[in-house]
Length: 278
Image 1 (spheres, rainbow, N blue to C red):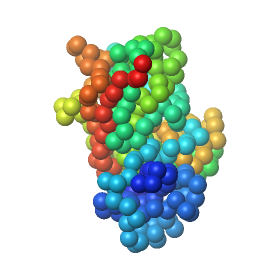
Image 2 (image 1 turned 45 degrees about the vertical axis):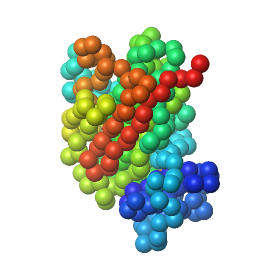
Image 3 (image 1 turned 60 degrees about the vertical axis):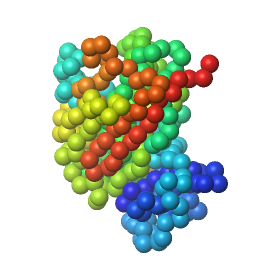
Image 4 (image 1 turned 30 degrees about the vertical axis):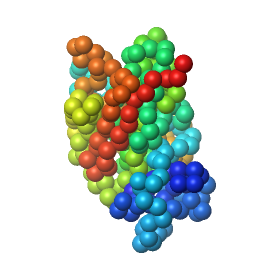
């Protein structure tokens, strides 16, 4: 299944199941999608219903608009570690994003007035499906609700102010999440997926997910050790080589650009870029 959060034609937020070029509205079943992730087996029974709206008539929201936690993993693709000349980390490098730092598929990313060093980072996101703690690597699949695409937009100037990444990773509407969540049965083996980022149609990043330094089981085990994970929590697993900061000259996202993050088995997350209002 593909699970989606969206704004209906009447402006109200909802969630449901993607069906072809439409969506089955299930918003009456739970306040938001994260509250229904534990019941994906019963949600599958709803997939036979006719679509309520055409996808073209709704506004995409981040698949989980209201996550309790968004964990991002820095320096987690070998290609990205090498392009930056960094040492291979011995433990996952974890930082956080806030929900209001992200937009959905088709919405505009906002380049802040504070800096032009606005970089793309194509990533695959893992969505947790139930409350859990101390998850062993062998049990990781039992807590995963699905996968999505993520553009972990970064304002490099602010990221590099100190060793703490958080300021550069949390500018308002600087990242994108979507277009939907693909459940594990439809995704298959995520390590075989290709992750690609295109800026104005030109491919800038391409790697397979098996290039991760710390794989998904390791990330889930690590994060669930230091905190209790909840349904709807998001682990953004890292970006590949090819980010704009390491190109000559640097390739920063700018107003008028279109940026696409594609993960095979999931789809394409597409966003424009605009300048922050004065």
